[in-house]
Length: 115
Image (cartoon, rainbow, N blue to C red):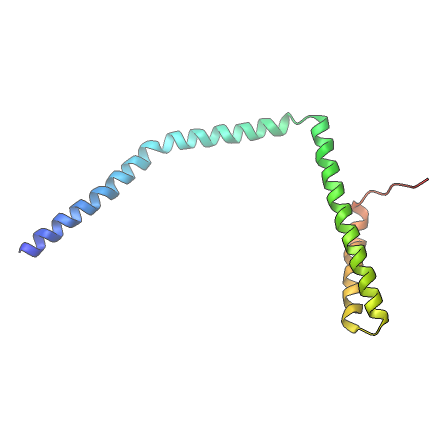
């Protein structure tokens, strides 16, 4: 009987923490939902008010990132072609796959005519 009483006491003590935590979570839920709604609204507002110069900067960064990737692929392609010409069959396959990726990227990398 005494073991039951001790177990009941421990169980009641342990559950009181769970109940208190649940009550706290329930009480603070409206505040958390409201804060999330404000963050979402701020994000929409920021997207709607992006200036022309900010859009240009973002586009410029994206173009530079693609150009850098294309340049890296070009160097890898040249190296793979050299290895392929020396008889490395794996390098030939690598060169073909690199060329395919470069071909797919060509449309997205702007071309500037050089004078």
